[in-house]
Image 1 (cartoon, one colour):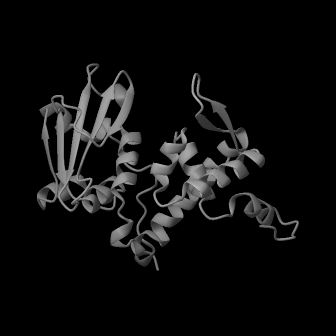
Image 2: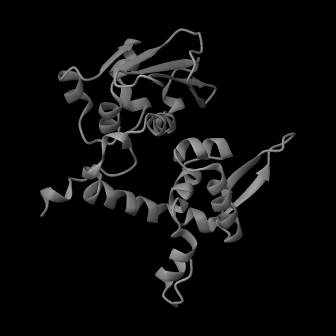
Length: 228
């Protein structure tokens, strides 16, 4: 897409203005490296379009790829130009929290995206040195209702199959409730009081949830309707 203007906003839009491009950059800046990881974080994007967008980003100097040792797969990494977009994306996200987030529709509460965000929010250094397993059960889901985060040796892995080991913390709630809590649209305490979330298991981990699992990086801004 070309705008034929010297304006730097127009030139930047030529690079990052295509559909999905900003979200692909989001995933790479948040640590997504492999094609399958990026696709899971993006949801409905087709493999063909993701391949094209990655090629465009590489051509424009925003990412580079490396072959995984001993494999035919690639991993994607941000260049300095891409890293400079992080505060820009944070500003867009904060704007969205204030001006657009109230327009969320039911189908946009995506359980796979939520689990990825929860995975990235885990602080392994704040967990016991031994393996910790966290189970999420979403009562509003028929399929993909149960997920596990396995935290071991500083790494956090998402599992959609029971790892077959003792569970340290159980979350029982809905996708919407967990998303709203993580996004700081409502408080964990309020949801527990309303019996919309139950967290059980290891007493210390349950009592200190937000020390080892952080909230959304976007600011808990009041919606626009509260300031107009």
